[in-house]
Image (tube, rainbow, N blue to C red; front, top):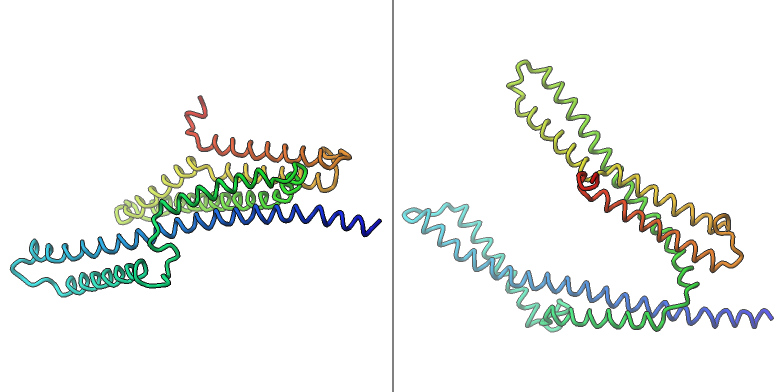
Length: 286
């Protein structure tokens, strides 16, 4: 019985593995096309941008001579700077034209390919991915089990963002404390404070900016909400792993469905909190 059971389990896992590999390959193709579009836009920007910059430099050079040094020699520093800049732009333009039209094979992957063609390929790849996902989508229990495996990564992301906002809040608070204390110290040291007027202005400006930024972006509240959501998700993941309440059903599929529902509710609540923090204070009060 054991060899038969092993053969059956292998036959069940092989289609699932093939389905996962196919979906991953489609995602990789879409991501590759998205990166190629970004690279192609940068290539086109560099190709046309350097040529236009070279033309503008070639026009600005004599214009400066005419408007400012018509009856005198231009300073050598300006001539050297403009000449070096023009030479660099000309060489950069020539190198990009060669890479685009003349070098075979080109160091550019999509030379002489319009961005609109790459966008069309991306749309077709995304459509193919959607169709294949519908055809190869595994059953619901398998998707729920896969979702459970992704939760630790989501918890780690939330904790990382919470730590970032907590550090930002502490930095703002320390800057606020130090600036406020420095204002009092400088005022007490200089009487009258004319020699340190610039320092007082800078410190007062810093205090105002930090206070306004802390009140607008609310890093402390964001850190607290992210940490609270991460803790709740981790608590439910641990309960599911140990089989304790509220995941005490005999059928694991019911536990997985309940777990996915709970985690999605926590994520929706987190997004709602973020939206509330992004709203103006007057609008939230009303």
